[in-house]
Length: 229
Image (cartoon, rainbow, N blue to C red):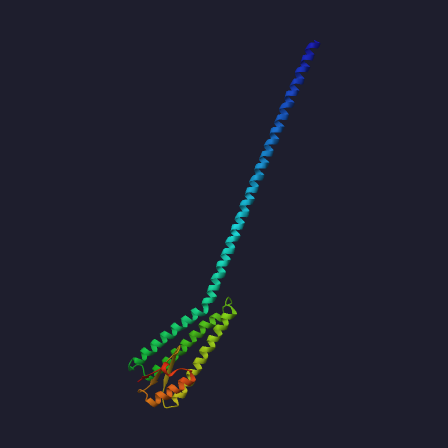
């Protein structure tokens, strides 16, 4: 009976040892798996961090690149403002000059009198100057335009206004010489003068040239005189 109990105790102890060994083995495996998972997550986190950082740097580079492109575009725009406006105003002058010369070559019809021709032509000329001034005023009102560009625009406006005044003075002085009516049109250095009535005499031509050279600071070779009946 004692031998049987002893055997039971031995079996029980061996069973405990097996259970203990299994538990230790399970605990070690669980620790290893947990460690492996932690290492994997840490490595994955590092990879994500590097990826986000790289994307951020790339995004910043794109922002800088876009900013440089925008600045370049604005710079090109500012540089081209005055030049573009000058070209636009030159086109307006050329169209007006062509129209004046074309109209001056047409015979006065029964519906349009000579007086109406000079009145309408003078109105169209004043409209042309107003358009040119308005184009430069657009530059002055643009907050993105530099002060240097605005200064040039203001100088052009003053130049146009002075030219208008000089034309008015010259026309009034020429009328005091016996010319009934006339129109002076300036396109850069070229000056067209359309006189109302018969072709002016040599003396009248000399008087016209003298006044225009003085008031408009022009060369006689640049003055072209025509008549409109």
